[in-house]
Amino acid sequence: MNLFDTINKRRSIRRFTEETVPEDVMNKALEMAVLAPNSSNTQTWDFYWVQSGDKKAKLVEACLSQAAARTAAELLVVVAAPKSWQRSQKRLIEWVKSSNAPKPVVMYYEKLIPAMYRWGIFNILGFVRFLIFNLVGLFRPIMRRPATRRDVQEIAIKSAALAAENFVLAMTAQGYATCMMEGFDECRVKRLLKLKCHDRVVMVIGVGKESDKGTWGPRYRLPLSEVVHKV
Ligand SMILES: Cc1cc2nc3c(=O)[nH]c(=O)nc-3n(C[C@H](O)[C@H](O)[C@H](O)COP(=O)(O)O)c2cc1C
Image (cartoon, rainbow, N blue to C red; front, side):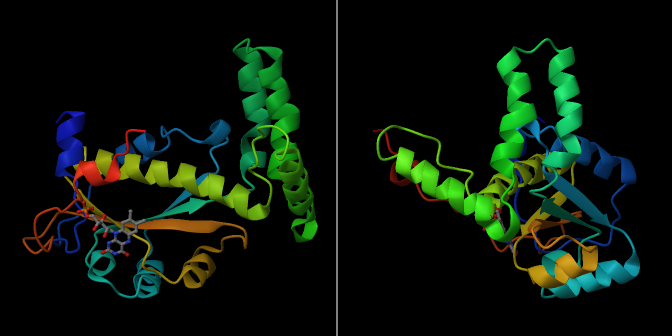
C-alpha cells in the first residue's frame, strides 16, 4: 500500500471485531510513531500500551465506555510529557557533538532548550518570558513561544499528535483499524497511568480489526476550496 492509499484507507473505526492484534504489528507501528517529526527532537512523548485487563477496564470507563474503546483489541495512550526534554538532553548533546553539528546547535541544546523549556515554580519564569517576548515583539519580530508552562505543553502536544498519526497510518498499512479518541476523562486516565500533573493525555487510540459496523457511513470532508486559502 503506498502512502496515498494508506491515508485514503484510514478511517476512524468505532467498532472492532474480537480478532486480536499481533504484538509485532503493534511494535512496528510504535517504531513508526517515534519517527514522527518533533520539536527540537526532544521527543517529549510517552506511549502507554495498556495490557493489564484491570487497567484496560478502567481505561475503557475513563473513555466514557465509548464503543471505539470498549471493543478495541488494544488501547494505546499517547501522552505529551513536557518536562521529558530533560530525559533526552544529555543524549541529544552527545548526538549533535558526534555528528559534528555546528557550534550553535550544541549551544542550542546546552543552553537554549533549558532556558526556554523551564517554566519555574508557579510558572514565574514563564510569565517573565511572556512579558519580555511581548515587549521585544513590539519593536521587532521575535519567537514569542514557548513562554509559559502552557506553551511548553502545547509544543509537546503537537509532537505527540504527529506521533499518533504515524501510529494509526502504520496500523492501517498493516491491515488494522484504529480510532483516535479525545473523549475521555483526562484526570482519571492520568491517575490510572500515574502521570505527572504537567503531562497531558493527547489521545487514546483503539486498535483492532474493523467490524461491519465500523463506520457510520462514507467519509466526509469540506471542499478544499473552503479550507485552502491561496494568499
Ligand atoms: C483529536 C481527535 C479526537 C477524536 N476523538 C474521538 C472520540 O473521542 N471518539 C470517536 O469516536 N472519534 C474521535 N475522533 C475521530 C474523529 O471523529 C474522526 O477523525 C472524524 O470524524 C473524521 O473521520 P475519519 O477519521 O473517519 O476520516 C477523534 C479524532 C481526533 C483527531
